[in-house]
Amino acid sequence: MESWGICDQQGWRKGPWTPEEDKLLVEYVREHGEGRWSCVSKSSGLNRSGKSCRLRWVNYLRPGLKKGHLTPQEEGIIIELHSLWGNKWSTIARYLPGRTDNEIKNYWRTHFKKRKPSHTQEEKRKSHRQKQLQENDKNDNTTKTSPDCQAASVGEKGDQETIDGRVNDNVVVDNHYHHHHHQLLPLMMYQDSSAWCDLIPADNYLWGGLWNLDDQNGCSKMAIQTQVNGADHYPRGGGGDHAVNYIHSGGGGYIF
DNA sequence: AATCGAGCCAACCGCTGCTCT
DNA sequence: TAGAGCAGCGGTTGGCTCGAT
Image (tube, rainbow, N blue to C red):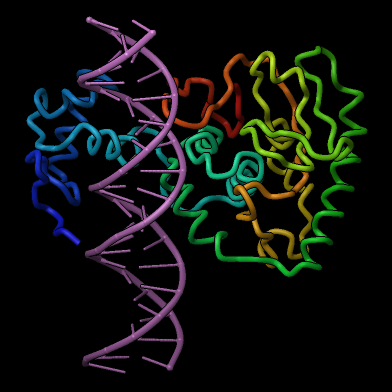
């Protein structure tokens, strides 16, 4: 490995950031706002690449970042969303205000990736989950009003293509979505944390027997009840983040 | 006290997609 | 429409810390 603190071929400094560099970057962003990262070195005096500056800002310096361990609610959200979207860390991060994609990615890799439940545990878990979701689906049907809020049915139609274009046999996506790019959201996003946590059985469901969330295509077979809401933004994979303004970070709610 | 290994996390790299000209 | 430049994403690396031996 190359040593930290040296410069790369373009002359950019690499390695850990110093407090002085942090200060310069914060001042730059305060004056110029986020973006235009390629200009940072010129304007701020930092001898860092725009990429490096952006990463440092996003993952460490940005106001509102939460430090410390993820809460059980956040962990649950990660699990749920990962089962929906796979390794779309930035997309998942949008639903966890104050958490970064890097943080979530690291967390996932260290906590979940290597764990695989036994076959029987997984079968048990799936059937339990299916039951839970069917009950919720029943309850939910009474609350749907607008076409945009129609819930996707769960586990009734066999294999369906997910929003990633992958096949997931339990996540059933309302065809409406494909035409309007409506946002798919897990059920728990509409419930307060205590309520959705009730969906998860206490017995080994999460921590004693984490299921294999890294199965083929990064898409677990866990049944997820989804809803389609009226937001016209859909979190996409790949490049081009779009300002991420649809998360309201206050009060533990997720407003889109 | 020294060594080893696992876990955590910051940061880099390469690639993709968007925007602008 | 094509190409260049930039921003963002996901994968990976490697240093640091801490507990076990």
